[in-house]
Image 1 (tube, rainbow, N blue to C red):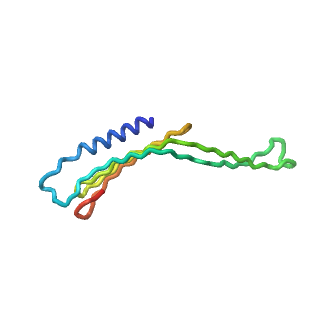
Image 2 (image 1 turned 180 degrees about the horizontal axis):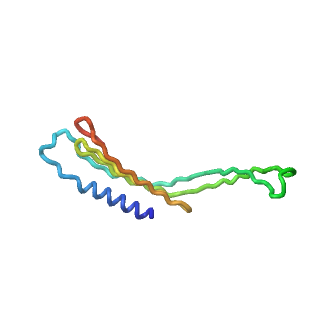
Image 3 (image 1 turned 45 degrees about the vertical axis):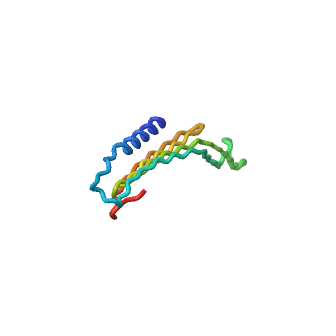
Length: 123
């Protein structure tokens, strides 16, 4: 499921990069037209310590509850693909972050667009 979302995110980014209309001569000379694709790869880790109370099933009148600690460490591979661009006053961004570990697979896809109130928008 996560690999399919990553493929969809890359397809959307490729579409946005190639579907932009061509630069026209009527566009002001100072209007920037730019797009960038950023790729980041890395390794991340989580350390958690789950603390809970354990008690005997016989009786708590003579035996008190004991504190039990259950520390866990997880390591995951990280991949972030981000495409950003601007054309005149319009700016857009598509970002996909994938985390794959031994027991967990996460994928976040974010997309956004903005219209600048000034003369131009810069990335």
